[in-house]
Image 1 (cartoon, rainbow, N blue to C red):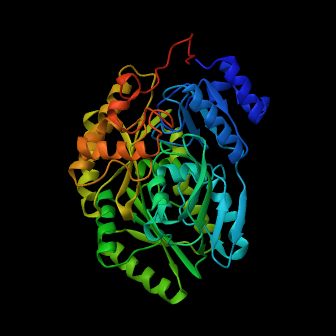
Image 2 (image 1 turned 120 degrees about the vertical axis):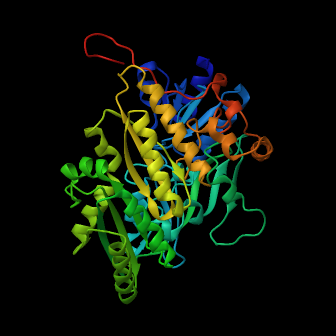
Length: 480
C-alpha cells in the first residue's frame, strides 16, 4: 500500500492535478485494449524527463513497481498495473521536439499519437512508416514498447527499423541516451534491445525516428473472393513472384459486414474475403506492378478487382480496414483478438484450422490479417454475460496459438506477450532461452520494478495466468 507520505512527494514533483489516487479516478486506468485488468494504487502523469527521473528514484527507494502507459491501446495487457504500484501515464509528453527534413529524422516524445507525427512532417513531403491500425490513438512510446507493426510494414519494416535512438530513464532514475541521429552507431545495439521490451527494461522519454519520403505514385485496389482460402493462396502467389506491395491486407465476410454499413468503403457484402493491396513508387513501376498483381489475383479466382480512382476512394478503403476492430462492436459486445504469425505459405491451412476450432467451440470468429507477412488476427466474438463463454474463448484462443506455433510461426506479430501470452512462452522458448532473457533484463536492474508480472509464465501475478474480468450482476440488466 502506497502511503500518504509517498503520494505527497509525488504531488511535489508533478503537481496535485497529476497525481490520481482516489478509487473513482483509478477506475479508468484498470483496463487497456485487452480483456485483462489490473488496478493501480496511484497514477502519475509527468510532463518531463526530469519529473520521470524523480518519480523513479522515489519508487525505487520505496520498492514500488512502475508501469509506463501510453494511450492504453495494448491488446496483450501490457499497459495495466498487474502488481498495483504506480502507473505512469505518458500522455502529457506529446510534442514533436525536432524535425530535420534534410536528414529525414525527427525527435518526438513518447506520448505523441502515431498519426500526429506524419501530420507534423507531411509539409516536408515526409511520413512515418509504421502505421498500426490504431494509429489515430496509439502513442509512439507504446509502439516502441511492443515493436508495433501495421499494414505498410510489409514493405517498410516494423518500429525497430525506424527508431534510431532513445532517451531513457533507468531503474535508478539515471537518464541516458542509446543510439543517435545516424543509422549506424558503434557498440552494442541497445536501441534494438529496448524496442520490443514491453516496458520491462527502461522508461522511454524521447525517441529519434527516421522518416520516409512520400511516394511519387500510389495505387490502391481491392480484390474480391468467394472463398477466403483463394484469397490466402493469392498472398503466397504475389510474394512468390518476387512482388512486395506496400501493403497486403485481408478481411473476411464477418469483418466486411461489420465495417461496410458504418464506413461505406465499397467492400461487397456477399464476398467471403477481400484483399486490400497497395503499391507505390515511381508512376511507371506502380502501373507495372499493379497490372502484375491484378493478373495474379484473377488467376487465383478473384471474382473482381476494383481500383480506387481518387484519393478519397483510397482513404475510404483504408478507413474500412483501420476501423475494423471497432466496427465489430455492432456484431458482439465483446471480442478477444488473437495475434499470431505463420509462414505465408501456411496461411490457407492455418485459416482452415482457425475456422474448425471456432466451430468446435461454437464461437464466431472474424479474421483480419496483415496477410503479406503472415500476421493473422482471428477475432473471437462473444458476450461475456453468457455463462461459461469466458472459458470457451480462452481455450479456443489457446488452440489457435498452438496451431500457429506448430505451423512454424511465432506467438506475436505486433501486440507483444504481456499478460495474455505469458503462459504460452514455453511453446516457443526453452527454459534456457527464457533465462537468457531474464539475465538481459537483469543487466538493466529492472526485474520486479518496471512493468512486473509480464512476459514470463513464472512471474505471473500470484502465479496465475491472466483471465477475463468477471461481470457481476447488480440488478435487472445491470452489470459491473
